[in-house]
Image (tube, rainbow, N blue to C red; front, top):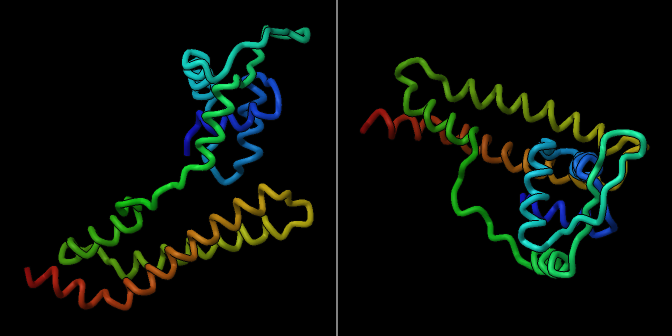
Length: 180
């Protein structure tokens, strides 16, 4: 996920402080890793440096001084260009579950149990899917929560299908490894 473009998107509706941007990010992307404040401010500094955001002013509202940022015309243009770009599918599998299963197969003779790992991982996925389903069917769930839960559920479902096909092939895969 492009933090700079997400922040530009959050600024598109009007000027905001860094603290507000962090809070809005965490609200709008509830299933994503929360942004650290340092990441927000570092990204804002880069956006200012690159002419995509500018400082509109500062205020304190009785507390510490806060800088107000707004997106520039160039920032708006770059944001729209980014939204129109098609994101290419990932060229490589970098999922930790995949890596653990492959390594478990490779070291099965040393005590690793890929079948048990797949079974326990499936249980963890199912538990997370129940949590997400409850979250998205909550009457108070907003659209962002529902969309992010649906996205996460689709990925978990794909993982489950991969786990099922891998479990079905486990004996063959293990035999291939031990034969080499």
